[in-house]
Length: 202
Image 1 (spheres, helix red, strand yellow):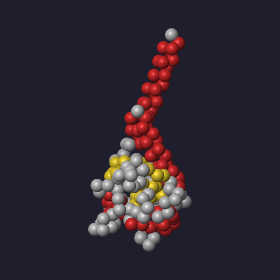
Image 2 (tube, rainbow, N blue to C red):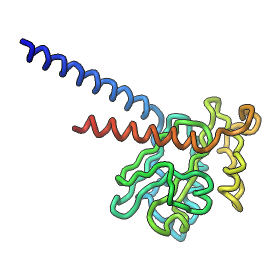
Image 3 (cartoon, rainbow, N blue to C red):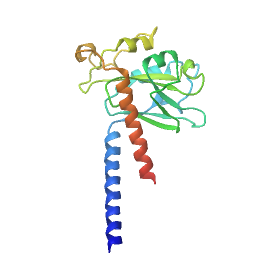
Image 4 (tube, rainbow, N blue to C red):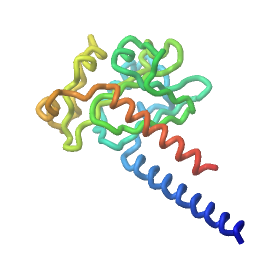
């Protein structure tokens, strides 16, 4: 009798865990999913399109909750989320997050700018990197911080996509949030999504 009660309790607990993971998965994936670059795969830009990632990122009106999807051969590449200074110098030694499964999804969980680059040796310096700007819920953009501006020097800061208001006027007092918490939030969502998918596929 006790064995049956324990089995029933374990089954109920497992059902609750699965339900919570499903709710988490639905919440994380509530936004749109964009395939990075609209190319066959995440890779070094072709000579005919050296700025393909910059153009792609500027062409999309991202929103909080959206995701960017990197597709690539896992034996040949990876995706790193970087701090602004590391992005500027292609310093891959201390990424905020690293995914190497060939089917990598980063959720955009906070307004501001997030930076990504290839983890393959030499690829970042050959242009396999991008940044994305995520607006506030009202559609305006945060004013880039000094570290954001330095990360893109000598390239000017990206303008907001057409159709959105200027970010500077809508920035909260004190300016932009520091890059580390934004990156950490995105990394946490990626880990949660990966964990949820692994559980559901068991």
